[in-house]
Length: 180
Image 1: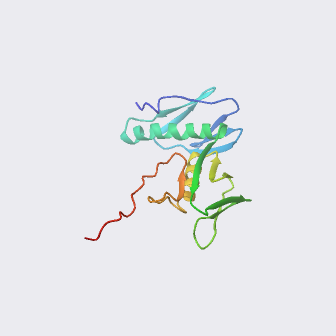
Image 2: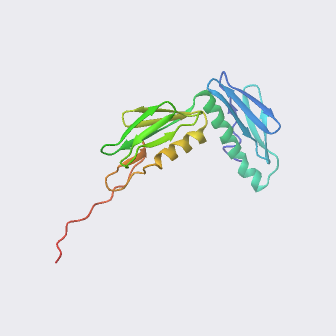
Image 3: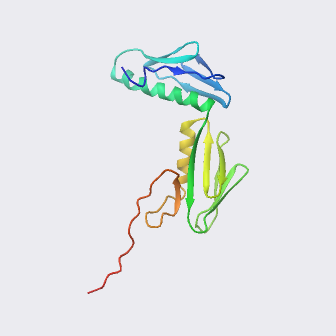
């Protein structure tokens, strides 16, 4: 039995769940999310909790058990609390600002980089920190990764865009050596 899959998902106040034709819909104060349920598992709706059950004991069913529980649990957390990731921009002359639904960045290129923000994601800038927020954990992580990929941190000076909690392993520069 999956240790993750057998734990029931508690529905906080203000969060409702519905199951229609293999699609679970979770509604909460921050919005609504839908997820198709995988074939080898089923979802049981209780009074204030959801539980994931396996249809059989095949390897595919065992692998989908914990995955489905994690996906539905992330949906419940997303519609009740939301998710966010923070990115830090380091570099001389690097500037970032948000105007409307676009994130404008001067990242040391000959041109300004403009990233169009999707409707389901909110981006805010505070100094050199970009905060990406939304209700879908997958979408927040994907958008944060796309923004980071615009100027990845380099190992010599650490310039670029990195996650707040990311550690950049620094390399030593050229050693001044005698040419003997």
